[in-house]
Image (cartoon, rainbow over all chains, first blue to last red; front, side, top):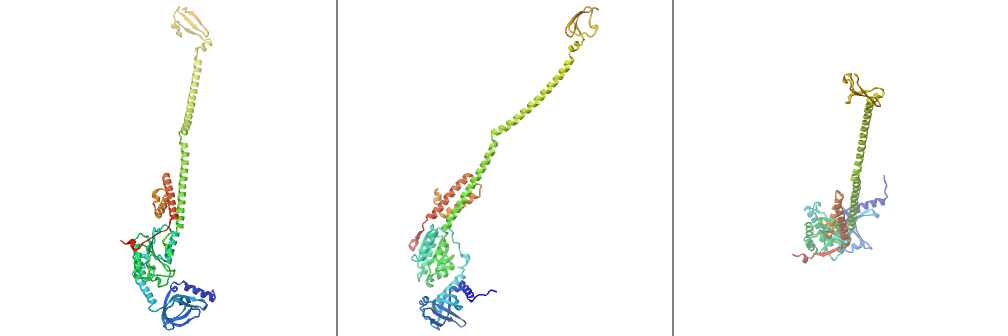
Amino acid sequence: MQTYSVRDITEYIKGLFDADRNLGSVWVQGEVSRLTRARSGHWYFTIKDAHAQLSCVMFRSAASRVSIDVSPGAEIVVHGKIGVYVARGEYQLVADMIEAVGGIGDLHRQYEELKRKLAEAGLFDQARKRAIPTFPARIGVVTSPNAAAWHDIQTVLSRRMPLVEVILSPTLVQGTEAPAQIVAALKRLYRSDADVILLARGGGSLEDLWCFNDELVARTVAASPIPIISGVGHEIDFTIVDFVADLRAPTPSAAAELATPNRDDLLQDIDRLRMRLAQQFDESLGLRSRELTNMQRQLRWLTPSKRIEADSRVLLELRQRQYRAVATFLTHLHERLASRERALNAANPAHILGRGYALVIDERGDIIRRAAQVSAGQRLDIRLAEDKIKVKVDE
Amino acid sequence: MTDDIKKLGYEAAFQQLEDLVAQLESGEKSLEESVALYERGRQLSAHCQSLLENAQLRVRQVDDEALRD
């Protein structure tokens, strides 16, 4: 089991109080008891009702602004933040405003009532919230041209997105005239071509910001045809307008930031696209160049000279085969001829005559084979191998 | 730079640039088309950049008089 020091656990509890949204700004009504006005100017007192009591401290600067009677027994409304005083391990209300019951306390009740009423009317519904355009060309601004908020907004817009055109719709942002002026200023922009509207005012006292809790202002914001970003007061201030607006920014500068893309981001986007463009183009060219090389290689194979070369090889081969075939045939013919010649030679009568035989031939050249072919006194030739003898038949 | 690009506002030019890159990336473009797209993309990005870098915040004011109709 972990053991804490008293200090650590108290700091931990203090952290819980500080992180709590409700305790950061509360109105508490009660009766004053045990009031001590210290020499430092700080006030230490307790407020109580029938069931409980609450320690309060009010520092000198805030205490000096209190205009009503604060003495034991008085019923008051205190505004402030509830936190932990670590040194004494106590929680306390650090007061920044004290009002009489029926004073600002009444305003506060009005605030809560209006908030409830508009919430019930559905004006705070998330579903009603419109998206803020990513690239506004024109930004409408409802604020006082004489206040720091206007300067802050221009500074932020110049830095982030100087491409936008700003349409200022001037108005008072505090005092009894303010709500009607804000309504008129908003309506002027509703008739303009603004893409988004900033409704802004710098920090101020609760009373200063009160015009942003006006019902007509809230309803006018809700009825806007153009998305509205509210940027009223400081981080912790929540006005009715904040609930009705499409987007709530904690300050005027923040509202200007939420309304615009950042130029540096945009420049980076362009660079990225440009790189993708170049890469794509290079790839496309590279691919084509490879394709072309392949084609050229194929083309070289298909060129006519290659074809002729290939064909003539085939032709040569055919011709050689033809020669071979003819030569073989001729040889065959020669051999047949030689064999016939040999046979012919064997049959040549000269050879037979050479061996001592003779041929008897009559005057007509016929060979005499029988005695009956001749008659007495007929002349005949006897053919020998070398020459012939002329003879005459006796009988 | 072609005149039609010069007339484009930032958002329109940027949108065209995005579309064009996506188109190139989807492929199947003839070389001629690719070259044309690339050239246009280059001009669009230059236009966007110059719009951003040279922009001066313009402020006008609408008063009751200005919009009274």
